[in-house]
Image (cartoon, rainbow, N blue to C red):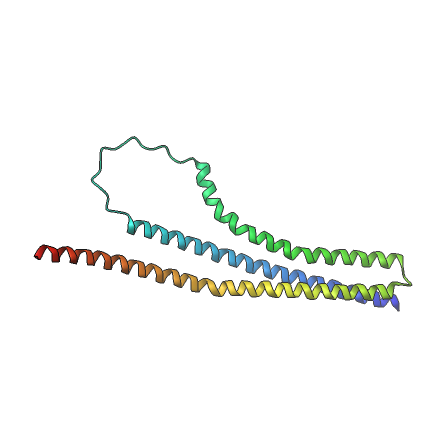
Length: 196
């Protein structure tokens, strides 16, 4: 009878572990999605910067005699510049993974303890088992809370990203308008002075 109970408990634990693994997979998928969105955002920012540079650069002067071409920048530097944003993106992801793996490791440790107890102490087992189960349940609750918090954070980020993109576009439009107005005003002022 006792063994039957123990088997049932172990089955329950295995099911819980499976559930946890599924949750982890879901979370990883969400993280990948977030990464893609962040990359898109970076691209957009680069485009905006390019536009700004093009708009603010003065008109080209008459071409002088061509100087000797400057040496091209070393490829290593370019590679580093390309890799930096990626590294910055990967760091938080690694931290998140660590955070997620810690409770799982604890769970595995507890399971091992359980098995050891099964082998060693059958009389005292029931009490210890109950204690361990309580611990496990606590851990699982903690883990679920953690996952929920992470999911909420991800959802928030996903909701905020479109708003950020919209704001960027609006800023871009404003900048264009300001540049145009400035240009126009300058022209007008000059004309007025001439007629006097």
